[in-house]
Image 1 (cartoon, rainbow, N blue to C red):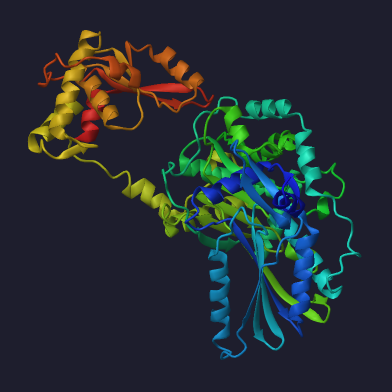
Image 2: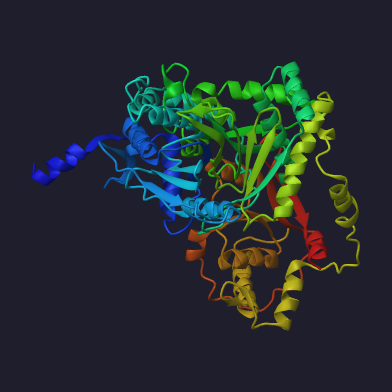
Length: 618
């Protein structure tokens, strides 16, 4: 071993695997290193009194030295696996800003700019510590402390512990000897490694039996850069919050279950389906691990919650059933989301999430009267975000408060505000009468109902009933050189479809016959669908991303004469076929068969005739 390698080994205290959620957070952080890292969390609190800045800096250094997670960084091995590397000693990142010379009216805005700029600074995931401190002096006895930390090393449940210890270390001038002995984070990782993973994955597969269609509000956008979410803040009035808490107690469920059920119902109406999934964040701290309540690190996990809805079931019974179903999964909540999705075999399951944050910061002694070493901690707030299309955060208390994060490049603020109002409306229904059937719970506002029942369905007009091939060929005649699909013009697309249609007819395609089309979104897909229609047959779309079991059920039920996929297209020879139009098709024949998930979760086919397609397009 060289002198350099010995020094390097002495600087590393430990090398650890990643917890399930750490894997996801590290992926999101390194996926786009140029964009905003939304998983940089800030804790901001005001301090009143005669503060000794050097003494506070010493306390911060002692805090980092005390906790292995605050000295950890993330690096990728040659195998591709990620590990967290704990340094024996990590340099404190400490910044100071003195705004006391500014006019009093200018200081708040200047301080807010510093806080916002600090949040925008990315951490280098491979260079610990992934925590930094910024002290802003607003006056002789007024200060603001900003603690920024990457979510991969610290969760919200750890924040009260961190604050409590930081203040203790300030009073003790950095002496940690009086603090309780820490249980190392590696014990938690060892606890995870000791679980029966096979049994847990079996439990998750059972919970998602029959589920094969993601519950997403917005389809995934490839190569989309992360953005800072927009936020809608709202609340339930104090009196109604008290009644809601009492109602939960009467039903024998937690307030968390009530909010989960209400969110599931809102999501069900938003997606128009009775089988929904959304992410939920669980604390992840195992009760059988002694000392876990005082450990600092990332223990939380984001897991899929599946909720099926029956219009005839009462709202109260829905909440009771939801809590019972989730209770059966409690001992399996350590499994990572990616592993669950692989086991379930449905790919991405959801793009909305919710978290019930029941870790008030005043549990660290940060109420309005807290006095630490001659200082008064006037307030504390945490700033965090999620990458989901919608991310709901609930804060219980005398008044139930919410924050709804939304992706502003995908969702309009007005739509997010409408979703927030619907949630409050459903919670009001729980308070009002939990015996009401789920199907009778009014989610929409009066204005929204008016749009749906009056404006949106007022679509009566005269239409021309012709087949889709005829309508397409008319468009070809109007603008043959215009782009139609990818780089294909309308003329080129029509010629390719005609040649392929003639090949299909030779292979048995025609009226009352089905042809399955299993192709990714591309110009080839458009050519294939149009060719099937021109042949007189009906197409059966099959998403290549569907699980094998779902594909097998669809093909067995539809019994297609042919299956068009990428391999078939590469082999079929259409060069000997003419590219002129084939002539009209029978309007009474099927045009396509679309398969959806029925109430059992199994695919169910719906046949659409050419007559309906022509009327719709015309």
